[in-house]
Length: 388
Image 1 (cartoon, rainbow, N blue to C red):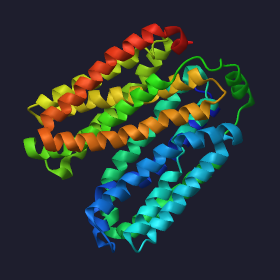
Image 2: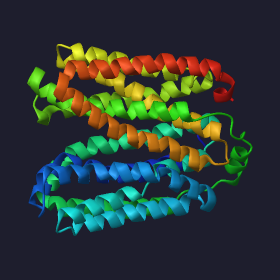
Image 3: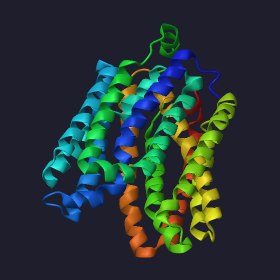
Image 4: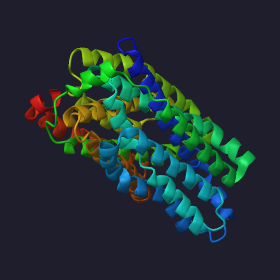
């Protein structure tokens, strides 16, 4: 699976996957319990609690590009350390919060550590082009693993530590991430080979739109699916891991050999529209499904396509950016990633309330299928730019 990666590429993938996974674990484990536990904070209201949840994504989106530009100038490692320090400090502020205003400030400060684009640029800097999608997939799998783990531990930890304790734990995870960043490896031979990559060759905007849509439909799915499982199939919340864990693990097992085969045939980019078509098809079938088994199979297809796109698109963006201005372009890309998550939550909730699960999933599926056609046309027009 990882045989073609050299030692530096493998260590880079594992280290950055660990950094991002620890950071995302600190965020994910708060979400399932936040609205209940925050009710004990003085000044609580549903609107303020919603702002506390959402403000992290807003500050993330606003600061992705500035962090990316600064990393082009001052280096990836210093900006990663600064971003993780802000995340940790924000966790401390939230842990000490004695009002909703202070809690919101802590969450906003956590979001100011906007290092997702810097981390992807760092991975690209230390990885040869032919292996880049595999390393990106490792980072994506780290995020997926942190999500699954957080779903299993959030309620027990909340019962043990309370909301303040959870935020102290997020601060500690940020510090551990800083230690991992310090340990990032170097290789003169690998870096010299990467320096010979071509410079800027095309627009990243289609990929920015693509990642916006990808994270919008992923967030929308988690807005709709839990309630659908309970209401339509009487599938209790405590059993939902039986859907999420097998589908995520199955997709992780399948995506690496698939990426290897696509890379060997130089067809990674041509697979992107197919992946969006699979997203659309699985969402459409899920909306019409009559059993939990069908939902499980559709979830496996959805997450396989999702993980393929999560790996292949940043690899394509990094190739198009070359070695100059990579941080800025990856920052643009991740800005739209976070905006997509925000838009998916808002639009998914609105559609769900207005029209129900079937319409919400069907609309999302139709948009994905339409974008598959649009992306196919764009790739045909700019094939030389993307494949180069």
